[in-house]
Image 1 (tube, one colour):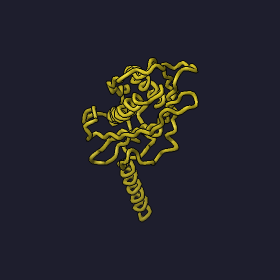
Image 2: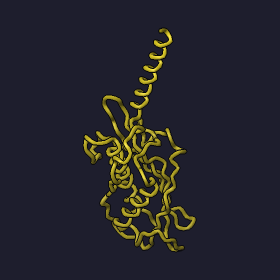
Image 3: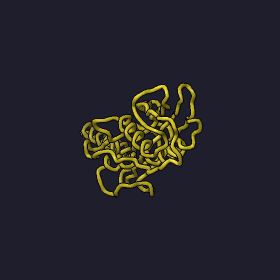
Length: 211
């Protein structure tokens, strides 16, 4: 009987620990395929002038694993491993978003994946592009993005900057609803945080000289 009670106590303790751990980051217990397509991170930025050079958006390099646990954008939120991307990668999604936003902005004469000696190259490191859902009774969800951009003219670096943003479901930048699957909210918040990063990137690229 004493052994049975001990076993029950251990099982209950394990259950509580699991609930507490899950409550710390509920995004780890997400529902596959419930998130839908990625919401475009549109900035609607229009260049003040168009550069005479074309730009190639190099395939983003995913280095998130190296930065797990690092604080992002001066907040309590940290770079994490949880994201709702199924069947595609963060790098593929980011490449699509960058190419569309840079092309529509008119900052450069042209944007394309083809290489050429006359083209500028925009390189991107993905240091964080994830979402966290924290809490047990009251859930708080955040989209977390940290990207390092380098614009090169051959071996010459024209622009080099890390841009970070965190958007939570309480922030005015959040464009989703208050009800839905965790994955749906996660994906919207990642898009929202990415949009805020691009909102800083676009005018910064527009001001780069010698292009």
